Image (tube, rainbow, N blue to C red; front, side):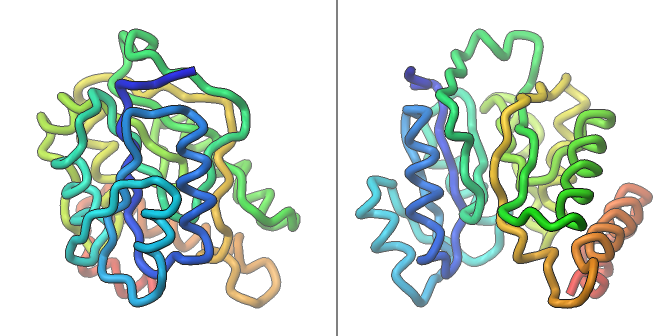
Length: 226
């Protein structure tokens, strides 16, 4: 099935091990285009992305910066922002533009590429949070209508938290649709090599998100994120 109204935008930096699988998963939905925005990789990320059939453009490093640049090149009426270490669902998916009607965008359920108990608990909490509060993270492959994206001025070029910020501003114009299909995200950012690290890292991230929502700036919070 074709989704010729959708542009897929993938920010990348030294993702030669994962970029091909990410692009190929995005191509399964037959979008209008797949755009990889590279932030200065020193490995074969760009070469592999081109071989896989993506449009590759260069950018300064920074996820918000890269995704904004990709959006400026994109031709689709709907923008899908997909992390380079995330895989789209294997199930055949069709997203005709009219299916969004009363929604400003959409997001998927989250699954990590690790089946440990602590990681599974993080998944459950993350999906519950996203559904209850309509507050997905970037790992959940966020769609947004192009006109809404332009209206809110795109991503803020923060060191991180650009995904939460975008969703919070976008929600002022409508609802995000929950898609009960699972994207598979890398667990590398929450697995730190000590027992139950995914749970502790996730709790830390929740505290950071709450502080951001309460008005603490991303630059100050970045110290906690490292």
